[in-house]
Length: 442
Image (cartoon, rainbow, N blue to C red; front, side, top):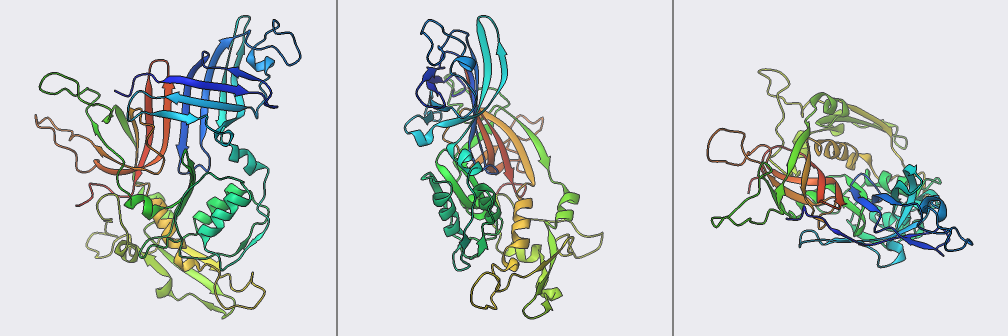
């Protein structure tokens, strides 16, 4: 079972000038690695308890060894070479040791305790691009003839100077803008909210984030439509055995779980997640969007929306009414259309018409968090943030036959994950989200 300990194969800490190194494998107590579809960078954390005589300060005799914190010294910006060997096919481990571009950077050092014969501290790690993001600004103009996915690639290459580019989903809409000296990550996340997938019939709404495979720019629809990565079953924390009393593969067991969110109707109504009214002023024609043209609700949304579970089903406005919460706008959007402001020649075309994405993306983002679960499973370093997994939970019943619960069981997207490694255990914690209840009909 992949909950067993993993091996810290390589843990090298390099000084800021990269001339000195210290091996912290023996002192590493635990390692946590994080991914999140809301985070543009991967992060990690290493807890170290070490001897106070580990490395001599630069220029000092070798016998004058001090603690790592003062001897290296540790001041932030150091590089960390990391490789963790796994213990099974589902836990092959993590490898950030092959090339300098993959090395982590120390962003901060906390929990520092210095004693006569020992020291302890926690290293907080980030990817190299997180440092570049803080020292770079998007300054140039991007043409309104360029699709958003092309702008995403350009910013990654020109401003973040990275080759770690994963899956970049195509967009159907173009968008012209000026960088205004914003940071690259800020600009990339901002563009994600305006993007419309190139796939016919797909809804607006993208995520920009980083996994160990690189930077991802994925539409919500493409994440929902992908094949499930694995199926996990909740066995109430008990290992499964076959008829010969041999333990079967429990690598796909749910060790424990909690439901952290289960719909918030009032909040969604305030955000306009079910229905909204758009009122846009066209300065070229001096006209407002018509009431009928500007309405957007579940009727239009459901026609082309693919979900992780059953189709959306909203309650009635009131007893006896034939209208649901998706038929009456609960939020009004007002905006002046961007017409011909960026191009040298006068144009009557709207720069990325908000009618194409604004209400759609807002609905998509908010309905995606209808259900939120926190789940712990045996370590599976094959999983990535953004993957789809299936979770099977038993019915809460006194019957001897344990059937799966059709409401909570089903497909979920991994919003965030944490791979935890220590001397005794290896496990993965997941935050799972989905847009509807129940299991998807086949």
